[in-house]
Amino acid sequence: MFGGQDSKQHTVQPYVTGTSVIGLKCADGVVLGADTLVSYGSLAKNRKTSRLMTVSNHCSLGFSGEYSDFQEIKSTLEELMISEYCMADNIPMQPRAIHQYLARVMYEARNKQDPLYNQLVIGGVLPATGEGYLGLVDLLGTNYESEMIATGYGTYIALPLLRKAYRPDITVAEGRKVIEDCLRVLYYRDARSIDTVQISTVTKEGAETTEPFKLETSWDFKKFKAGSRLIDESTW
Amino acid sequence: MMDFGTPVLEPGSANGTKQVPQFNPYQDNGGTVASIAGDDYVIVAADTRFTLGYSIPTRKISRVLKINDKVMLGTAGMQADTCALHKVISTRMRMYEHDNNKRMTFNAVSQMLSTVLYYKRFFPYYTFNIVAGLDDKGEGWVCGYDAIGSFEQRKIVCNGAGTKLMQPVFDNQVDWAQSWDGAGKPNLSLEQATDLMKDAFTSAAEREITVGDTLQIYKITKDGIQLEEFELKKD
Image (cartoon, rainbow over all chains, first blue to last red; front, side, top):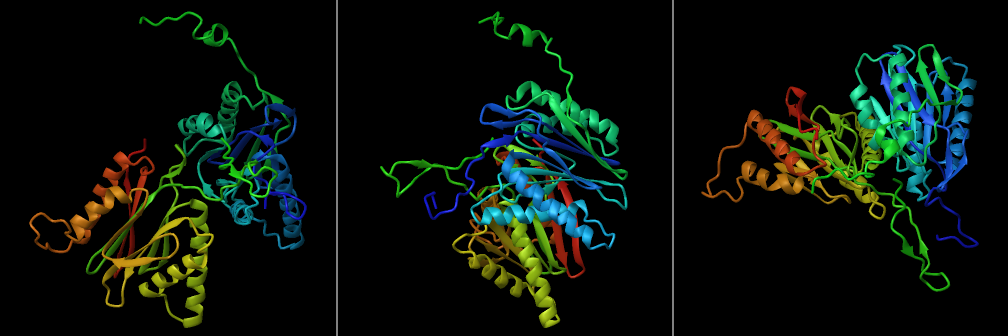
């Protein structure tokens, strides 16, 4: 159970990790965002690794947590999409089905005490109506749908911003801007983040993930430059 | 952010003191479910707040499963286990219907849930359930469960995070327990039960941080199931 010659190694803590993924459901689709950093503890190990993948024409996926476990999930999903294609029935797997599939895979792994150490954010569109779909699965098999989703530090920093920005009629074009702003704020305060990011948009027209691009940042805030405690302004 | 679990002592290691992190497969996602049964109705209520430590990742998840138009299941505890349990119960309910060509009765469902929970006695579902429904005569009943399948049939049950705040009030207001004048009082009507449920959850939400957001109240009568949503504290 705890290692040794005959026993199998289980993931009990993540080593090579990605930080937050965020997502926003819009009237005409979904937007996902993530930076491209993969860390090894406090070391910025790989600065340009994609943490978003396109699953199908109308579904994207982002991960935070252990990179190797995500690679395993990614190849499982790619295999699944190929066998779906081989059905040749022209009935594509819906984002909700992909979400539920991943939830079962993750829950089964946790039942074996051998979790896939990730939080996964599934963004998609229902091809018939063009309505967005946004869901989350984590290493315990927890799964839910929501209008806005964030993982890791994003739960504290991005989720309140997303909740404030959300309207039922927000468009993907507007949502993209919100996601970019959230990634910028995360970059300012999450020490395991980077200013190179990717954004994935899913609409009826298809799923599209941008090439990694640099965020425009400004460090001119007075207290960023001076430090808030340089002069103690308190009166007691 | 990441939970590395509690380090445990490795028994077989060289000095017997090597610390090994272990994976904790359980998580408490909060939530409360409650049910009041009357002579010709039963109501099932659950809040929709989903918590993870001090965070609220989402404010709208369902804790309730409709089994048929006379029986419902409500579950608090860990969301992933809740989801898995509801899938198992749904599947077995459908199998029962095909095998026996009839719907599961309240008694059948309550016994099945106990069996399903105890089946996982040594790796339990971290869930706290109530089954509410109308019996053959149309009278309302509710069963309350622990995580491994012990259950009791009563007229009022609540389970989950808000239990210790709500149960004594329900005992007093529904069963007339600890009543100062010792007199039995008439049974609650559906409207009175619904109002009591709203008050109980509103009060619990004041003091228990994992209770809040929205209260879903399902009213089961001979005419079917009706859903009423009632807003709770969001902070």
